[in-house]
Image (cartoon, rainbow, N blue to C red; front, top):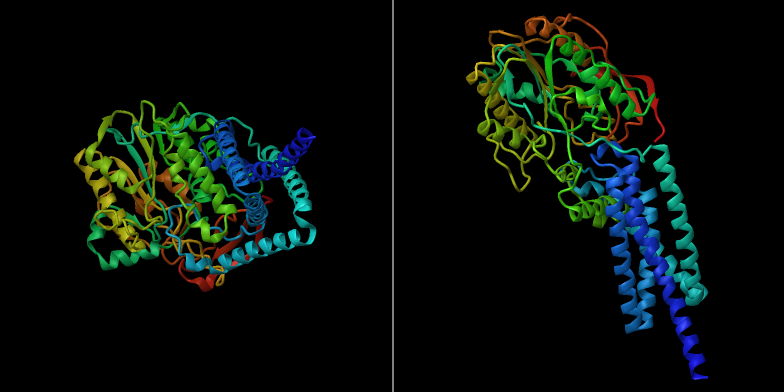
Length: 559
């Protein structure tokens, strides 16, 4: 009789504990397997690795953390049944709240680009998040009082099981629709030949991210000595860019083809590199092409035309660090706003996890480039050489002063970061001069887009960021820095590149002259909302916002 009672008691205990196991599996599946994979599939081209490298790491993470959760619940059950029930309730509240948070409260997420986030701008989101978690908590507590704990166990079991199945099906759907199952090439952007210059002819594009021409013009006025850095150059401050963010701007600069949401961006990006008039002309003139940028589409072998793109092992330096960063990435989306601040990291940390083989990997760091210039210097080749070097420029975070010293407390300013760019550029030019390859080089110093605040001002519909710098010098060109107010556009760059390659001076590369009137197109979108492009035309001076008008055309793409 006692044995039967013990068996019933053990059976009841196991059944009661199984609900905690189901909840633990569901919670850990959502946060540590579904969330990282869903983010990866939705943004697969922003990661250098593929799902076959990511899944094993996150699956092991899921198993370990599930075991930990189950273990904690087991200890709680042994200590006191009430404690176990309390932990089960907490886990269920976290599961439901995180699901709602990560799927319905994601319109205003903090950036992962190194920006020092001003959390006071997220007060509304923080309050909404707090209310959400409180409401779910009160609802669950009220539900328990209404149906009692025994029935609540069944609710936990049914809800967790059904939602996990839904998440699993959703994950498969996202994977298939975004072709997240495709294996990526093991290609890397390396530093090979970055400072190898031709004794014949060089063509250099130094792209300093986010340097705005309006701020540059003010700096030239305040610091006239900076004009000496650009002796022999023509500065075109009246330039209208193409897009407000790097993603679309760089392929447009290289190809001249507009992206209007007619196809997936990945296809457009590859075609921009494949059909670039610039690259075609360089190859026809027997230039060796080096592309030093972090946003090259390494998922397609078209990039193998560049001499510094190399095969690599595709391995991570640290699997545990990858797991931690992926969990933080999930936290940015699924955690309440009061916790998101502890999940922030610069996405470049994922790039830094790649194992280097026999070559060093390219890094867009201004400081890194500056230090390499001082330590490596310029070497020579007889082949004609093209270099496209995309550096962080004046991009956030603003942690450099004008002497390239790091400001650890993040108290730097945008203007100081531009001055750091000038220090870096000055050193680069000096190294080219010392090596005797400055005069035989076409040099362009430009930005992909301008700057008007980190993410634009939604309340005022700020379009901003439409006025990036553009300065150029031709081969053997000699004169004081010349400023042209010609109304130019990034649309004109392919012809300008071609003329510079053909030997034109920088004053002759555009057909447009000062005083000309023209319409210049600009496609704007808000941060992380490239699926909705808004067309503007600038009919006047670049800084006359009264003549920067919407055309009524908008281009949409389903995400």
